[in-house]
Length: 305
Image (cartoon, rainbow, N blue to C red; front, side, top):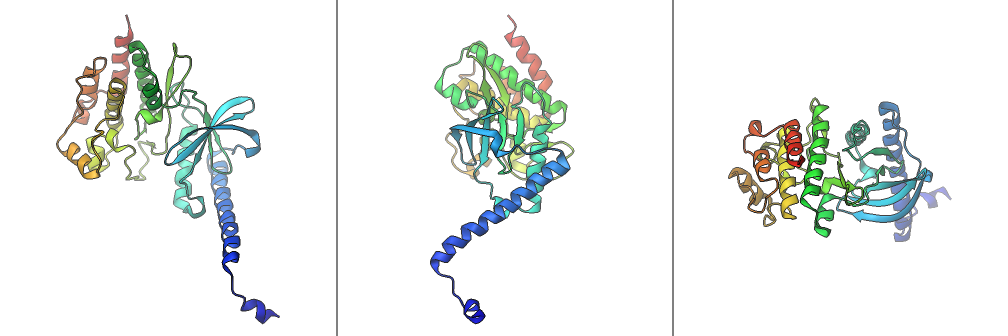
């Protein structure tokens, strides 16, 4: 009898039955490890899936899908990381994910999208921003000059907050700026802290978030600083004037490196609101770029009648 069991050959049907079961157990195990790390090491209690009432999908990108949900009577956005291979997360990846969540949970500002928690399935629960990101909003609806000035000030104030507590965003661009509020009082907030780091964090992440918004020193040597965020902010202002990403013609990494090596910048002929500030922010020398507090002061003067 036992000999027959020992010599049993798995059929194709057996494989299709067993493999998903094994993978699900591996995912459950890794998710448990992650949530345990968040709870024991970072004092973040996961939000139970049963606490969320899912309503409808509101967006999907290459790395995440976002749905509108209700959590204890409050509308929230639930971000599912679709490319997060939970079944094969290394201990290093688990710690990195936990550090990202911990960092976001500490960012308390009116100009930062609020983090509420993470579910056992590793979905991120955050503040619902009904107009989506700045890129989509500005492509769908023209915004008055004063509105764009105020939104620029909000972004700069969020960046100033991050830099004041020694956090470098590392991927500032219109896709990571979310917008909420009535159209006569729109408010912009910074989101997506997957690449963000504290200045004293020595762990290296040799990744460029959104290359066409990255500073030359980032593209050349992964040198991130507050001033590389300022460069990205300058190109975000350029987007707000031109309603398109800079360097749309670039298709390859080689072409992008040529832009960095030759110190090229996009044409700013259409930049009537922010041209002076944009040119300061994208200066080739990071030391000559303004800091975030100087940018906030500049924009406040620009808005004042």
